Image (cartoon, rainbow, N blue to C red; front, side):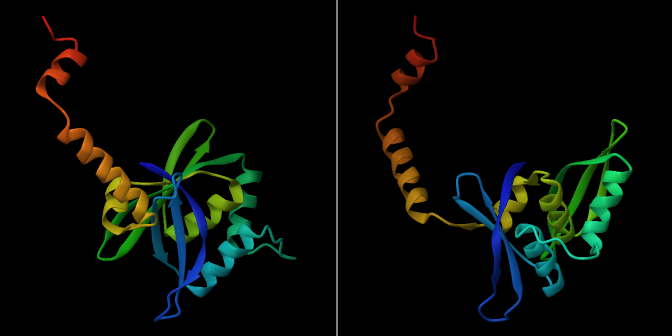
Length: 164
């Protein structure tokens, strides 16, 4: 799994639907997830640390977790099926970890409020992420090609400690 951070909320240029954008630590890959207007508002409120006069649903969940001494360990986006993302929230209750099925938008809204890490399965990233820094990707490919083209079998034997 790869840890990702919320980069922000954007609007799809065609559909005008909100998209939450997750980025990896190197800012090389981004994972766009379409969400509803209500979920976008809940996430923006959390990102901007806005406190409503009365708790909204995600705030209520966090209040329940706090009052029951439950810690949100992490959230995981663990599957992509038929263009639908699936997620889970890992909670720690009295030392017992439990995984709770959740929509990614709800899980992310709770993760932001609890400062829990957001993890994404590598398969999901491979299937649905978009490159952010194409120049860095190309530089990495060129460096690897250069390394491989200059590599000799003797280099592998000597460096691996197998030379006689």
